[in-house]
Length: 280
Image 1: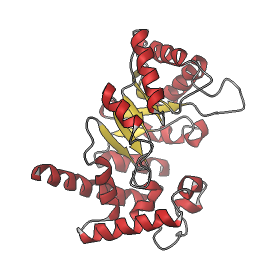
Image 2: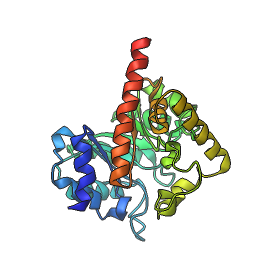
Image 3: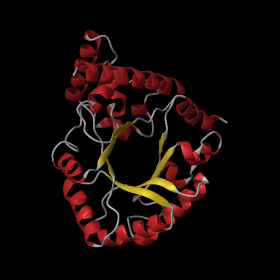
Image 4: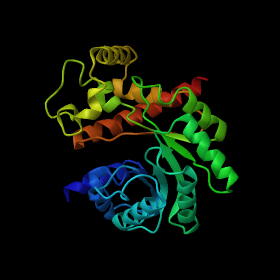
């Protein structure tokens, strides 16, 4: 029953957005199968993604019509649901015509297997291309973009992506708002044992472990202490502050203790945002 506790805890604490991808667990669906107990699809928003190679098969990757159809149908089986709330194109595919990708998504939406679609880590130019083609062929525009965004990594969003999303009414669902845990302060004095940096996912953290980045994280910790909160709560509040339209931040804790802490930080940052809005 161990794989199910993170989802149960999340749902019991009001989390209703379950974001996965075919590449997570390399398509084994472990995280998805963990949903079958206690996850009520009608009360949750379930998303999945496709792009990265799932095998050595040349057709088992990218955003071709074939791979999108195969990926979505496998996701439906793993989740044991009739439809996916949001399908993300996990990266832009330069080897597949964008019109082919949009027509495949449109057909799946017409079949009722996808409700909405979005992009992940696309440039402002890529997003504009998708919207332009969608309008030309009279099909569905993307409704959301999922970029990396945090205090230490702002360039992916600020600039062309933010401008495109605002222009076309596209929401942001950012990932890594805590910079892979660096903004919690846990790396301020070195790399702890059994942390994400020492795990198989360490490559995601390595880019944040340069001394310049750690020094910025230390300053966040100091500022958080001065205003009576935690660095994690401050980082989450910062990610949300001043954002227009639909904005959500996704976290991916590795342990039960980390998850409990992040739920607490989420509550604290909501209070910070509510207090700010009350004062405005």
